[in-house]
Length: 340
Ligand SMILES: [Zn+2]
Image 1: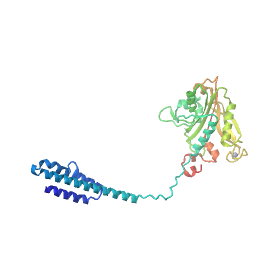
Image 2 (image 1 turned 90 degrees about the vertical axis):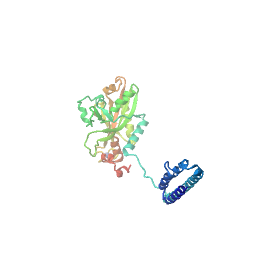
Image 3 (image 1 turned 90 degrees about the horizontal axis):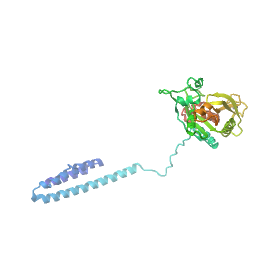
Image 4 (image 1 turned 60 degrees about the vertical axis):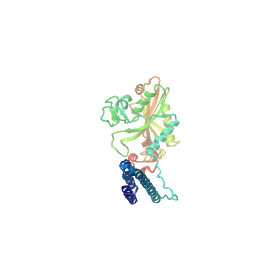
């Protein structure tokens, strides 16, 4: 019985000395854990001589209850103190004005791509996404450029360590993908996306850039449709009074091939620094889809025809916004990007 009395005294003294919640929990384990002193004292009832057993049991239970109550009271007090502390430390002044969010905006290339996309959507063109990693077959061969064809020199290519796998040098391989998916149905799509060329980086050329390819295939598609489409695009993009001129050119995958110029939007054709005094700005290459390419896409070149065109949105953005250095697009300079 005297053991029980001293146990109670000791436990209460230690409880009073605990300073935080961790110490409280440790105290609880020491006295009420599986091997805790109170737990063991209760278990000992059976060893007590029968004459004293009842009194011992009653006293042990009283101590257990008294200590448990003391522990819970102390724990509750501790929690309340913590809550008061955190409320005082993290007080929120609801009368303060909110912090302003920095407004983000779209990259000038994305803005231009979206404008191009919406103009062609109005002309009935859908957007077709095509892969950036291509095989040699689709990037060159099926576009009428067999191995060793001199036209391949027009594209300095990033080859991967896997033979025959490369980063696409233009969006034209997408023509093959879309033709094979849609054949024999008619097609009216644009193919936007990033292209890669192993070139020296200068104010006029980058190793990565966007391109937007266009492709229309069907019966009775002629060069008049092509020129009308391109003129409509140039006027929506650069102004209703734009004039368009075409020059003959060469691409392996179109026949005949053309380059498209429009009168300089800066000087209205009079001649200025932007157009190098010529009055004209080159905006895209185009042409009627080569019969071999139509055949490679699954179409019969004797019954259907088509036109294709390709342009660089960064170049278009440079014309539209008066940007004089193409390297600005990927330099990540906020002073440049915030202007758009
Ligand atoms: Zn000009």
